[in-house]
Image (cartoon, rainbow, N blue to C red; front, side, top):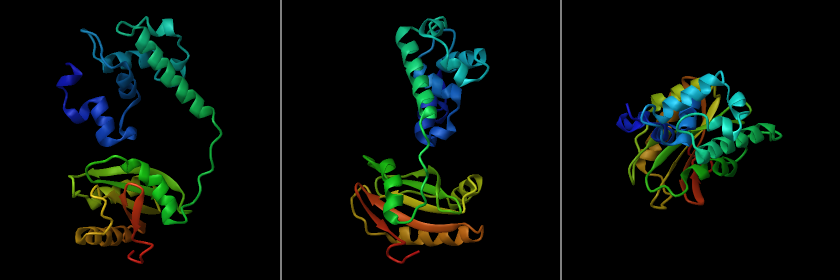
Length: 225
């Protein structure tokens, strides 16, 4: 079956957009690079073949030269170059010295981490920044996409993700595309509900940021947490 006939949230590109990078498998990421498959095989089937031949190892796959990649039917010169370039970027990233992850000590520091996720958005989205006991960031994850002026958030999902990530505390954030930073009554209600729900799990809500481009409102700074 062609990937185009799959449900939208099962297609690799749409899945990455809707669910985030961590939700996409190695073969799905490779399929995104391949783009289109052949009449016999979809891009995902082709990606799975390539990974199977490399024993499911991206490192082994990265050792293949351009001509070796082009031996796969459906992988031409341009696709082979794209795959090789992406794998080489991954290799170079791995070789970079790891930056020390610093603890979050202010709303400005959490804003700097979260703000890039909201750039250019025309609808509200809701993100969670998970922290360990030392308040060092573990992961940022989108949990909801809303409409132009509202987003629905399931507190059970936030709690589950916090437990899955072994977080000791979290910072939640959403954007106001209108540019108005004033919290709404529903924002205040949600903040309190999240705080109370997570307290039962001994997980602290450190802050709730409302973001509008390069500005933000911090519940913690305003003494509302």
